[in-house]
Image (cartoon, rainbow, N blue to C red; front, side):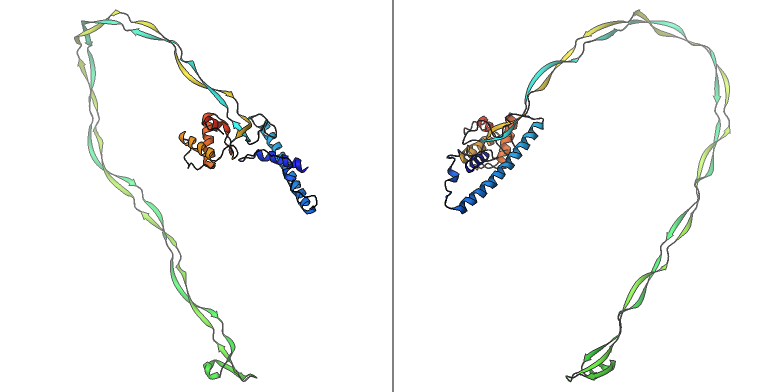
Length: 376
């Protein structure tokens, strides 16, 4: 049981997000240090194995849930095995999303259908002089205009109105005495002469001390408050009407008419005569075509096991080379320090998306290092 558990845990550690693992070596190395004579050590080992088995069960359940979720997702999923197929020692694997591939093509489409244009050839005319009756004899009524005179008149511009004006309330200050501490009697030590005339009674205690019953007068303070002297009221104010003196014209003499005879008028005019009728000509307009770019999906998105970068297959010098290559490509703007941090991950995934390579949230696919020319 201990040997089987150690092998399963070693395999799970190879599937970790950011770390890889080497070969597990001898399968019995995890139990070599256990002594058959030491029962306490054996008990501790068995307890540890039980907890590891429980963690393994939880991990298997999580992977099963992930597989069910992936099967329900619209993203295609291949290699749904619990562990990466054909895994090799010293390499790291993770489920990586390979983006969909698209093909761009050009197509010639009809932009404007063929048609025809009608062209009008205008008619031709010539001008000849001709004496014609310009205006026949007639009569006309001539209007004798009316006569007006200007008079002044006083007109109402704005009628008399009233408005309600609010008269604010007035206030005054009233002072009154308020009791702070009521009068009381207290027993105080000392002779009566020390308390003036406020001593009511005195006595001597068993210890020889003189006690006096003293009247303590009440304490008052003056409080000033603001009260309404006269409440707020309203009053009606009359706004007088506004008049304006205007000048206007009034009819003094109405208009009249008179008949006037107008003789006929003749003249020479240039007359335009038709020489050739107008014609129309139909001109064919060919169809117009344009080239459009079409983007078609060739392959769907695929979620599959892929080899990823980790501390096992990419040391500090390799990370430095990766950061340098990403910086040269214009995707990395951080320090070249040989440490895979969030900026290195985001830069590598941005490069992968731009190149159509597999990407992951917390992983760098080996396809990226190969595309950048970095050997693991």
